[in-house]
Length: 496
Image (cartoon, rainbow, N blue to C red):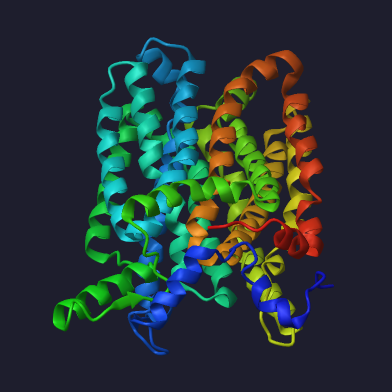
């Protein structure tokens, strides 16, 4: 059953329900009527949505690598927490703060980097930020004390967040809504698989080469990706491309001819930056975004809490060495891959089928949400299963199978929610995704700090069950917004 719809006359406004026209937009439209408007033609090959598939995928590949390397670095050292603590003469709880600073700044970074990409373009933000991210791995590898390591990890979380901050916006630039979710699912493997793959690689490196080589390895990978980006990454933000075209027309012809870019914000740069930097927070205040971002925050808080305690659980309780503990992260990793392969491509299928039922054939953002209900079931199932099999010390394969279902739930919810944001906000998709990233970054980074103490106080079973109960509480959200999201969005519009 499709959600309740507005009348056909209101349908066009409902496809962009969170964008509210304002006086400034009306003024721009008036100016454009009297000027030569620079815009893309129907078959314009400079339009990112008309690029060849190979060019699009080159951009996706490079951005996805950035999006996987930063989360990878957030957890890659976790199998060596004990070794780092010994090497830097500190406690394991203090070493976990390296993850906290990194993940929190991964959440805060998009608040600044995403809106700036909507002012200056995507490519320049990717290249500047990821160059700095690469350089920050060097002092991490050479850190003489825990204070230096925490500082470098925290800063690298901010600059490395650029792939997560702008990736959704870049995909929105290049792909039509009817074909976006499948590609987006593979891109989203970065933020999801990074924390799972990191300990697998880190376990081998720490065991054989020592913990400092974790950061030398990250330096090499990041440098290769950054260098490839300088040569292969192309600008995909349409307003920026059109602005370049406008400048060329003015240089080739008459600079006084009155060229304007279609939909361009003509306000002073300082004003545009100020408006851009507050945009994610204004988006976050929208009730649907706030609730679904809370759901995302729960996902990341849960995953990082489990990942940072895998060494303690399986090293202490089951007697595994670093390499074996690292391999256990394949459990959630296989769940991620299964969801991306079998569930995520169906997001487009469901969207297109529901859209076909409308007279004009256009879809609504709510059509992205049905498959999130799969995740709403798998998530608590996996968490309660893991909690009590670990608590009662069941054989380790029984405990790890539960993380497979956790992985499926996480991918399903995160992909459906993020595609929902993109469809709602279109040109400002990066800011919308940044709004969600703020919550999940702060909560996902801070909560794991308290988990070891909570485990000591009430046991593994009840600690992880708390996350399970919260996931049950939020489980109805996708279903609720599928039916009533349109009315809520119309009532709580955002002036962007």
